[in-house]
Image 1 (cartoon, helix red, strand yellow):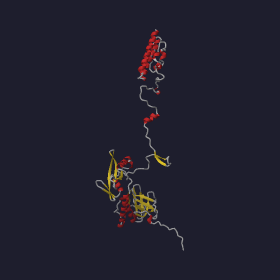
Image 2: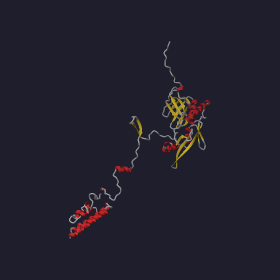
Image 3: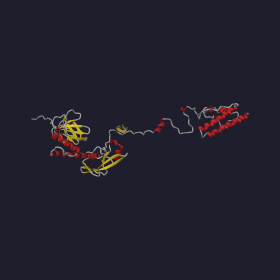
Image 4: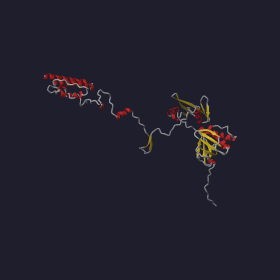
Length: 409
């Protein structure tokens, strides 16, 4: 008889979990927890992963040991059980308390944690030879993992580019790893420090010898990974050297999305930044133009001084419109009509001359003389290049007026 076939169940066995250097049940109490919480925990690399059960393949919490400080065996003061089942893990920014099932489990957890953070098998713990062998295997795996893992400060740049990066972004760090210019698996270290206000750039060579990295200094130092190379430079400079980490969270170039006119596809276009206009051109375009210094300098209205004569309207010699040949006896107008404008110029002086008591022609002649002086002075002030010619015309006019007066007498 045929029986109905049911869908086979695929059990979630332990092999489905990520591989760990060590794993077991572990009770954890964080700085904000009220009590211990039990997890299935596993150590892989420099990270502790916590699972709800040993059948789960996805962790619910994790704890990175990069900021490791120390381990302690002190039991909490409120505990009433065996003090040998407690230990504390101190990081730079927090303290986590753990509770295990036995003293042996506590020593195992402490041993594996110290092995991965210090890259050595501890010798001051109560461990069996089999336990030490397990930790030695974990150490070999961790060294191999770190040998393949590049630190964040490793950049594939040239010697010159490394120097420019350190100079341009001093806040991102002052130690950078890069491929060696000699090729192969060698690495170079570039550092930048300020000495007496001057930037000092130095380059160090790190040779790859098998699974080790050897820092080529006076006393060569062997490291198991590039992370260890970085730690060597930091520890031997009192942490003055900081790994370079370029902050790429913010863009440096402004751009926008634009539709291509040919195919209609959207493309990203970087906006060109126009150069900042200089103050000079801005004033020339937006404000009044500043003329070069000339002999003719109009007086601004805010100076509260009488306005000067306009060369087109108020020029002192209106007879300039007619040629000198037209000045004939009987056709020449009286002097008072010939020069009406000098009377306005006379107001510019502080104390204008008073006309003397004389026959009628005399004040006119005096006025004409004063007009000539003012005209010549104004011409020399306003138009120093044309003043001599106009002065000659004024002198000629004066001479004709004197001849007319002589004929009348």
